[in-house]
Length: 115
Image (cartoon, rainbow, N blue to C red; front, side, top):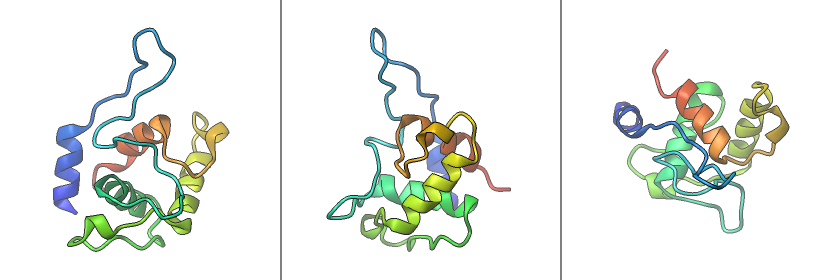
């Protein structure tokens, strides 16, 4: 977990609106919008998002530290994302269970540090 936190601290940036566009880019380390899909989304971005969400919702099972590519964006993870979104006024209208730019930025800002 410490390696994930160090990665986040080193790579975290605030997402800003793209010049001449109202589309907000995904903040590093995220490269895509995360959501439930068939087949389930997997990869290091899903692993990082899930490890962050475990800090918010300890009932969510963390991914094994040894297998980030095997970590899937599943139903319980989408539920944890939706609960995280509902608890924040700036995200409550986006309570979809999808990790887009606003949610990713909020997760990084609020969940990257140990408590």
